[in-house]
Length: 219
Image (cartoon, rainbow, N blue to C red; front, top):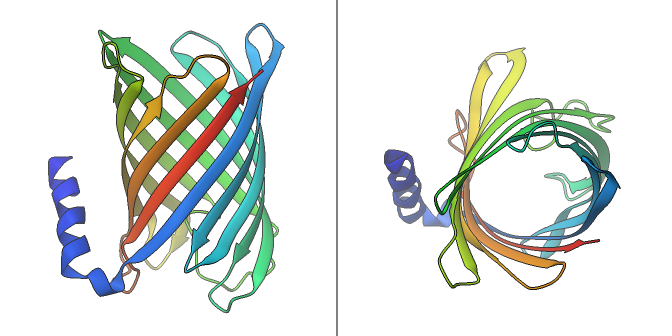
């Protein structure tokens, strides 16, 4: 993991002119359906080069099988700008297996996601791991600082393309993120992150720098 982090920081300085910068925002609300089942709704916007690149509302349902295991399913309606500057719409369904464990003041999280994108208006475009079919593995570690509202967190996410092609199936992208959450009184939650995003097997793809802000409200 240390080697991956050093590689990303080195790449960012070595090829700064090829880098891409984005701002991701998210606002959501969640509540209970029954004792072990909850629902969530989000609005997400991703901005780059002073314009809105991607917008998607999302609805989800999560079920608490065990304290440490919570599977969920989500639906997204995505409006995304392609390389020609035109906006296209698509749909995506996420099937998630969420694992959580606490060890002293550390929080250990892992998510395994299978995503399926469909109804792409331009079927001839290149495969995109954000919107098309993919398997995603995301481990994360957080730390609850004593007498502090800040909870720092680090995560990595690996994208696997299961579709057969010239350079697939195989892993084709990685994300590394460092951030923190704020432990606020009441139903509000706020988090922020800095994320590096890089595709494999595509040397022309830029290294993406992302600043992310999330707000949540729990009913």
